[in-house]
Length: 499
Image 1 (cartoon, one colour):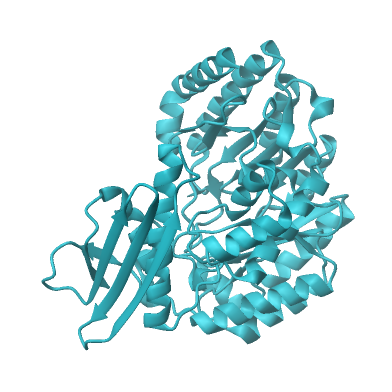
Image 2 (cartoon, one colour):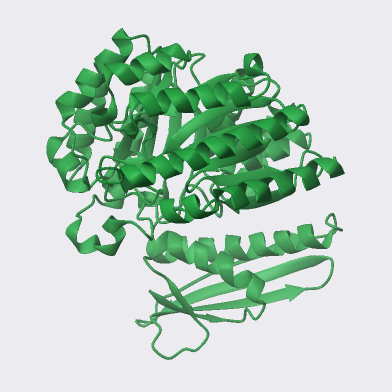
């Protein structure tokens, strides 16, 4: 959809207009010339210093017109940044209202387009607002529907039960360790993941660099008496490497990291069932790691084949029982709504199969067409369900988890997510992933080690966020791991010298 935008000269408003457009139309292109456009969006912005009045209307080629307006009092906002944010939100409010009327599509998340809606809820709570005040603000200012506000409310309360000191963990860090190898690459994946077969040389070099990073970061943490809240092995699939390589890696972790008794949780993704062996489970037991992920995504064999997962449904079930038998007491499973060729019946079947296993936690993802994925590059090959079917599948997941004793404990959203829905993590009582809470709510720094690992440094005093990412391909990582480690330590030194 090519949309002609008129009346908005300030470029800072163009991104929110694009984001709102993308909620309704695929691959929106904004134009500031009328020629060749399919929809015209005209705005009038009047800022008198005390309040802002915004009028908006859209007109299509057939002459259909929809319009909306809103006035916002700005007298309580003296900070220029916050004042601009209120004007931006008012513009988004008007544009969303107009497009909902024009398309007939209701956006239950309102004008919120960010990844972390619960982070905003936490912020308002920390500012001293009551649950009633937060509910009213989200409903009236952000146009969020009641069910989504209640979902955020439920998740925030659950998080504070799981991590009562969530707001005071800024002086600690969590560690993400990325292993960039998988048996094969899934069609929807954009993570740094490389088929491991034939890459043993790259694996060896990578692990050497990773051992170095763990050692150096561990030394810095010890020298500065910084405690670790959680450690998370992701990827790729961390169980793609051999049992011996896993053993040496965890030994390096134990030798390097400070205050081991203080670490609340260590998680290892074993998402691909075809990587799980008794020998690897023995290694996990040796280091008292019992929280793992085994991810079916779907229990439909044709779907697994279509998305490039070369294991069978039976193998998922078999490896789950093996892990359980060998002492894994906190198993997470991922399911994906909207995989190619799947509708409501197929997803309901996957839920019924999940019921036979009852993992401690379950993350329900909604398929997102990520820009760099094979699925997005070849969209015409992959038939996905309609917005209405996707919504019904999500509703069924909500009902199923509730009736089986699961509570939502974390939430995130993505661009190009089907149905403009969300990804939600559910857990049985006391089985929440603390790492998932920390990464979503941005209450502390996450130090990323390994290929493709992204670090997010959060200043413990100011809350300012700084990003730093290791390279995604093994060769670049292998060539420069010492340099990337040094840069992370420089950032840490600067941040903690200020605090």
